[in-house]
Structures are given as C-alpha cells and as structure tokens.
Length: 236
Ligand code: ADP
Ligand code: MG
Image 1 (cartoon, rainbow, N blue to C red):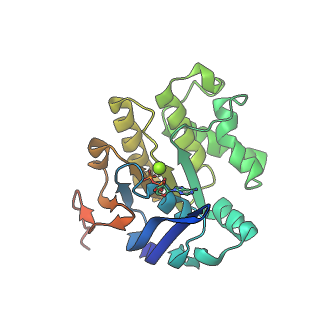
Image 2 (image 1 turned 60 degrees about the vertical axis):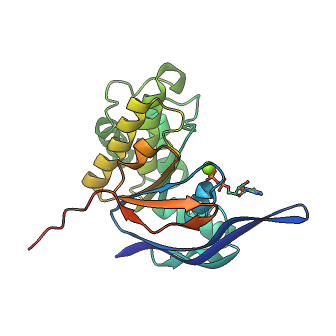
Image 3 (image 1 turned 180 degrees about the vertical axis):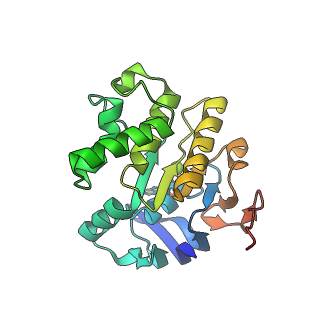
C-alpha cells in the first residue's frame, strides 16, 4: 500500500523577482513500512521535498497524497493537526530543548502535541529510552551527552506519538561516519519493530547504501528508483 504518492509535483520558490525551481515535476510512491532515502547534492531539492511531505510547505503544482490525505491543499491549522497526528521529525542539528532532560525531551510531544495521560506517557517514554539505548541517561541534559546520543534521543522523540511516518532531513550530517551508520541502523531497527515508515535524506553515498529504496534527486528531478537491497518477501 502506498503511504505517500507524488504526481507531477512541482515547487518553485519566488525570490524577489525571480522564480527558483526547486522541484521540477517528480512522481514517486513510498510504501508503508518502508525505509527510503532521497539522495542528491546540496541544492538538488531534498529539503524542499521533505518539507512538502511533512506539510511544512505547499507544492506549487501537482498532487501529493500522504496517508490518504491530499496534503497539497491543507491550510496552516489542518497541516499542523495532520503533522501532530501522523508525522515525527528528526533534524540534522538534533533540535533538542537544551533546558529539558533526555526524558523530558522525549515526553514533550506527548504533552504539547498530543495530550497523553501521565501513566501512559511514562510507559511510552521509558520504552523508547530503552529502545534507543539511552537507559540510565534519562536525567541528563543535551549538553551532557554526545552528538550520537542526542540523535538517539531525537529518534525516540520522533517516535513518541506512534506516528505512521518519520521524516529525517540529513539526520547524520553532523555525525562522524560510525555514529551516522549506527543512527541509520537504529532507525531501521525501529522500523522493523514498530512498522513506522522512515524517509530520510543524505548526500553521503555510504549512508545511502543502508536504505532499501534510493531516490536520487538531480537539480529538482528524480532518477529512476533503485532498490539497494531487495526486500525479503514473505510467502504464505
Ligand atoms: P537540498 O536540501 O538538496 O540542499 P533544497 O531543497 O534546500 O536542496 O534547495 C533546492 C533549491 O531551492 C536550491 O536551488 C535552493 O537554493 C532553492 N531554495 C531552497 N529554499 C529556498 C527558499 N526559501 N527561497 C528560494 N530558494 C530556495
Ligand atoms: Mg537540505
């Protein structure tokens, strides 16, 4: 089943008097529970595309369907509600709240985005802290942990509300290669355990090799999808 479908998707920015084409008519589908990467050099349109999928920005034309919803036409409030219900975000600079502990950073969306009761909140946060390998570190603040640990916390925070989809724009750009590799594999493990669809971007070819489906962007256009590693198909 397609979780995301883009049809002739176009995004053109207006910069003063000039039009800057960022996405020039792309078509793709992303299946539920898949692990997909968009690769391409700086300026190829990765952030623009992820922002549209994440309902942070509108397409200029074309159609974009995310979880059975035509998101190209959502207004600000509807987009915010849609994000809060269905999508988690991971950022390249981690974006943890510096005055909150690891525990509180992961709990944050369960208070501010969705209104979970305290006992259910606690169980979810502790489960995720364990899942991302941060047990025993929950009372530390972001400045007391490493970059890789910060990104582990950000992965847990993105998963807190049990979203269908997690979007990660260059989540490994500020990490050394070994740490980056571990974060990608943590994301994949969470996909395997929870069935969450992960879509991320990178310009690092080594990181890209860890994805199952690779979409290559070049100057706002998409090359044919490559399946990096064949999925194992279960037979009844
Ligand atoms: P990437 O994430 O792959 O580096 P971007 O999506 O950020 O690519 O950018 C794609 C193109 O759109 C680039 O030419 C960039 O300069 C342009 N662009 C991105 N954001 C804006 C903006 N807010 N206003 C004008 N041009 C933009
Ligand atoms: Mg970018």
